[in-house]
Image (cartoon, rainbow, N blue to C red; front, side, top):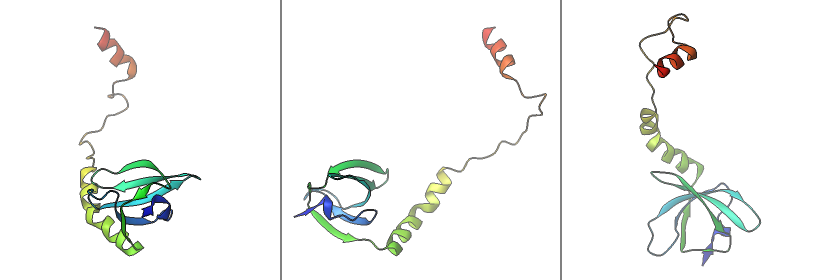
Length: 109
């Protein structure tokens, strides 16, 4: 049976960690002498430590750099739109912008 030690450092893999689990995309991002830090790439990325000798049910395949780049482009537009921040339509002149002192005075009233 495969183990986390079989996953090469900084490579991407499609794996089933347990027989009943879904297929997930993993990357090893750090390693020590006995453990690896695994990045699970999903709707919400998550990192966790695994012992190198801990079994992995199945390493389905290693992704090529081209496949990883293609995967990234699938979600690139959604991520950029979600984080777009609109600039305000107005600007403060140095004299118009309330200073910290003015804000403190108003809070005390």
